[in-house]
Image 1 (tube, one colour):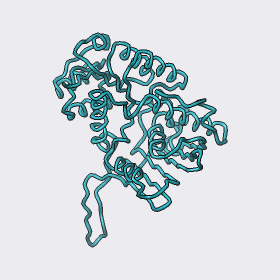
Image 2 (cartoon, helix red, strand yellow):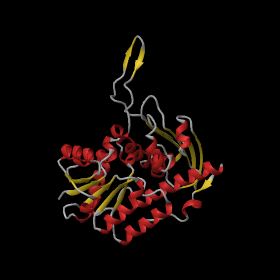
Image 3 (cartoon, one colour):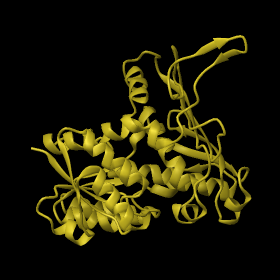
Image 4 (cartoon, helix red, strand yellow):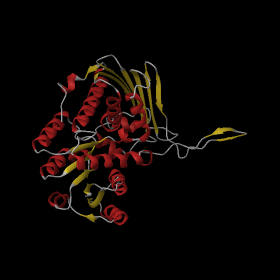
Amino acid sequence: MNIRFGILGAGRIGQVHARAVSTVPAAELVAIAEPAAEVAHQVQADYGCAIRSIDQMAEADDIDAVIICTPTDTHADLIERFCAAGKAVFCEKPIHLDVDRVKQCLANVRESNGRLMVGFQRRFDPDFNALKTAIDEGRIGEVEMISLTSRDPGPPPYDYIERSGGIFRDMTIHDFDVARWLLPDEIETVQAAASVLVDPKIGTLGDFDSVNIIMTTGTGRQCTITNSRRATYGYDQRIEVHGSRGMLTAENTRQSRIEIADQDGSHRPPLLDFFMTRYTAAYAAEIEAFVGALHDGRPMPTTGADGLQALVLAEAALRSVKEGRRVRVSEISGPHETD
């Protein structure tokens, strides 16, 4: 039996998920909720779904699960509402910008026996997944140091920056999740540096556009993250893992895998332009994993607790920048939460 989906919010990421649902055999897109009529009708035309209000979605008997792609400040309320209505929930990160509100939300999900998955699509990228498998198989021995590079082709619109919660909560949060996924033990300290190097207006809005973070686990393993809102050469997404017996790397993905060598040198196609194209397969794979967990009753592969811990690391990084010191994660989180 197919899992019947409703999507709340049909903007850029909502359309990415609509496409992902359409590629999963055991999934069916029944309806979308989107206030912008032109956008809603375009998605309806593309995927043959109905247009409904959020209230109608919550009461619908033909909706088994929803994908929340609305503004961040609505996520926690919608998660609670739809879990209480007996529908499974896939929510884009973050659950909320406030750690305490996320904890309250997760407690309410548990109380209602809700099923919640948080959208960290990079775990489902085929190359990154192969890298993780090689780590788990011991191909490079014990993991010692990880380097994560994530640079966007250009900054988002100013109105997005104003409501995003800042670069650590909006952009680096994906790298925080990948770091936790790849490291064998939890991160205990965070030290961050942040600057405005791309666009001065971003600084006037209270955010940064260029950051570096050094994190350490309880056993002394290290992870560094480099983020920038500008990469003139394309969407830059790389991982390097150094271990006791070798090294693993996941390089950038290009528009094609050819290389041309001629009298002017060697030339390769440009990088993919942004997350919608770079992570197409990953978005489909995470929806497929969500559907599989619902069908089989398995735990969700990326949980509310994962969303909480990534946000905690973002808060620790921001505090590190503000106070100019290394921050212990326990200062933000207290004891680790469980789903």
